[in-house]
Image (cartoon, rainbow, N blue to C red; front, side):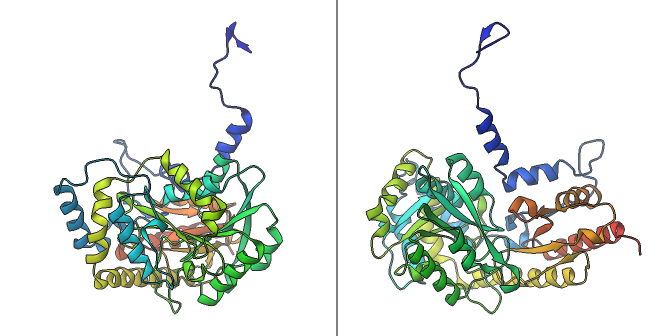
Length: 425
């Protein structure tokens, strides 16, 4: 084809591909949209303190500073001059060994370094797993609501996505009947997020076992996103999905981002919980290695710091972070209960988020969750995540992993905003 008498450029993107890219919603993309609506003065500076209740990055706040042992480990690794070279494909052997030992504390089957693949944060772990699972005609099951990056990666891999429901009134448990109804002989995997982003849920051991039995029956792998592992503050303790790997194979995704409050350090992992060798025999393990062969590695001095970081960070530090999150979760839940415009079907028990239902029928000039979030930014400089970005229209995701005083301020602003836009009686 020629345009204006000249030959068209070879690198054009087909309309179908443009549509796929446009439909690949990400948290960053939605947050960028919201940030564009912040009120600014003539010098292009925000006119008010912006309160970020839209994404889980507690590292910006003094209460969530990482452990001194973690900082010391990085400094020591950097100054040792032992970690300035390229990393091996799967990660440094010492890093893999340390992660295997760290995770094995909670598992009946001890992991080995060969079970661990070090990644550039959990985002790369998601990319590698979804890419490895993709094949012509295959489909994968994602939770609704869930973490939208899974959908974005699946869209680029042309992997069909089917969404299974979570049940709000049952602590956001997996709707197992819906999973079975969606599955067929081409279903390659099921993603499960526990503790839950965006729901604040923590699954019981009994529920996890049922999920494993379902995966065995339907013959797919469970991808267990456990980035928020051990950030639990309710009555249900964290149990890793790998406990049930003898029932069905499990790919565990994790990172140091949340528990150590260092998302910018970009160190994550994929772990094969596979005592029967099913993942290896199927070729999936080899395909993940092939994907890692053509991707970037985590920074080597961060990898080099992992053994000391995991060994020397105290239980007291972890307990302190959980105590702060528990306090802010309580604050968030109590304030929400007093606001008739938003409803919380389940009190958060883990992670750093809560999902709340937006009652747009009580609002005078707001039609949906996205409009609510945009106007909230414009009028109150408070950012929350619209549920439509997570597959749940007219819901909101709120993070409570910020400085307690800022959280209270933000929730008060949300309440004032709702009162201002409430329908007149």
